[in-house]
Amino acid sequence: MIDLHCHILPGTDDGARDWDESLKMARLAVDEGITHILATPHHMNRSWINPKGVVVPLVEELQARLDENEIPLTIFPGQEVRLHGEILQNINENEICFIDELEQYVLIEFPTPEVPAYAERLFYEMQTAQITPIIVHPERNHAILKDPNLLYDFVSRGILAQVTAASYLGAFGKEIEKISHQMIEADLVHFIASDAHNTTNRKFHMKEAYEKLMDEFGAKKAKAFDQTTRALVNGDPVVVPEPRKIEKKKRFFGLF
Image (tube, rainbow, N blue to C red; front, side):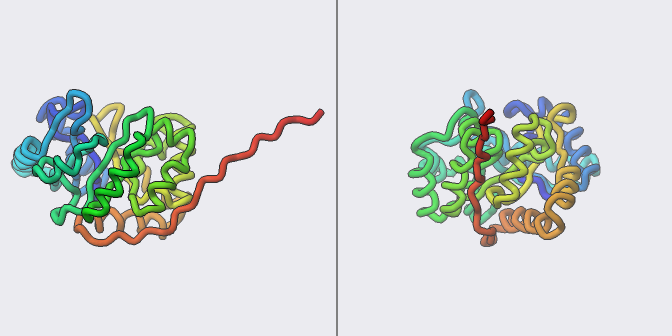
């Protein structure tokens, strides 16, 4: 398996605290069958500033330590970029890590409470520059939780989205578990990633999530999610199904 969202780099954000914890996370990932990880520290999120020049040397150091400890895991540099108005400028200044070497796909995080009004225009400008934004964990965004079709508006324009394994499994509560299922069902999300932060309360859960995906949606859906993940890493075109809106349930009040 390939995990495209993981906070395994030490001392960069609220993920691994030190090299020891990074190695513990790596061993846990291998136990789950993960072979490749995109290391994605928060960037431009509060006090967490991790430009490409910081991320790449840490990834190289982590890979060297993995090899020294004979841990069969390959690490790629990445970022979880908080949405901000200077993203294109930061890209031009070589501060942004892409998923792929062709620099076509980048992970974008919305602020938890909202979807900023300028997101639509910024995403359009990114797409015009041949860059596809990927919205990470939309199922945990408060505005999208309230109105899931905010996500539809983006995905219907060619934006991609990633659901978190732990969300789908219910680790963040029943409401987020339910909306994760609905997003998968409506083809509003296109791959699963761990968003792992440690080996205790924010673990990988990738194997269990894929097992649930197989059980609820079948082998075809699981294969499609895996293929999307591989295509993103390779910088290949991603072919996804047409998204559908999530219909809101009508509330019926007693007449008597």
